[in-house]
Length: 362
Image 1 (tube, rainbow, N blue to C red):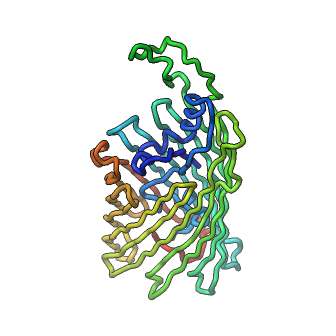
Image 2 (cartoon, rainbow, N blue to C red):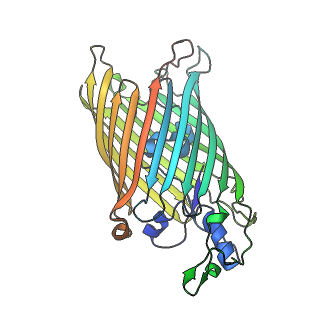
Image 3 (spheres, rainbow, N blue to C red):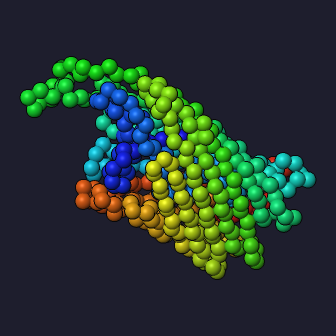
């Protein structure tokens, strides 16, 4: 999973630099001051956070109505004030019964992303597999307690040739031929991660029309060493995450979804809450064939995020945009991050391996 170092400053400045200082800030502190110290860190976040279950809570892996889900996600932010920060993510999830006579099922998933940020091309490449055991709590198979685990591989790198230093500025002018007088660390480092979570989901009412989830998770339990200089005292902060969601059908045409997320890592806190209203066009079979959704989310003291989603059969596309309202709004012209999501859900043709559970449909 990607992590980002954040300097202790005003909240807007923290968010502006959230990617550039993921590792590079530690490197810069050591390079420019000659000493290295731990800096407050915060993991990667998406505005459409409810679509990236493994990053949010591994116990949410595979908690959806169909048999499998594959998706791609793209985010670009801060183009108006600095070098753009770009993240591309792909993921896949599925679930299956343990055996025909069991009411429990197991979910597995795999998530990977590539991130590039800042003037020295800070790059982060990650791979996160996840497994989730879902214990049925009643004969109706509409309430489950889930226990999920994930372990990640992360590689950080930067381009030393693109770094600039004070010593290269002479007489008020920059000359790359001037010696840097600095000793640079290895341009790559590898971090191994471990996370786990627990989640409860249930459906209620006629035809299970009301569904909800609530859970808690943690990441970086091993507080791995996080330094290009391999300093043992510089470690990655553990992150705690809380998730909650509710969805319901209002009538044959309209339904809604409400989602909330809380993240705490070091000195950093993030609260997001919001929802979507869905308009559904149904087939004769009563299965939704076309859905258009609109809504807004709020990242506290940072951004308003309008969201539009279009769902045709089993293919869904979402787009959101962060409207920056933090103390950086004057510099950013209220511009933040543009985000696209595209995913496909479906059912196995072999019904022998298809789960027979009732899961929340978010």
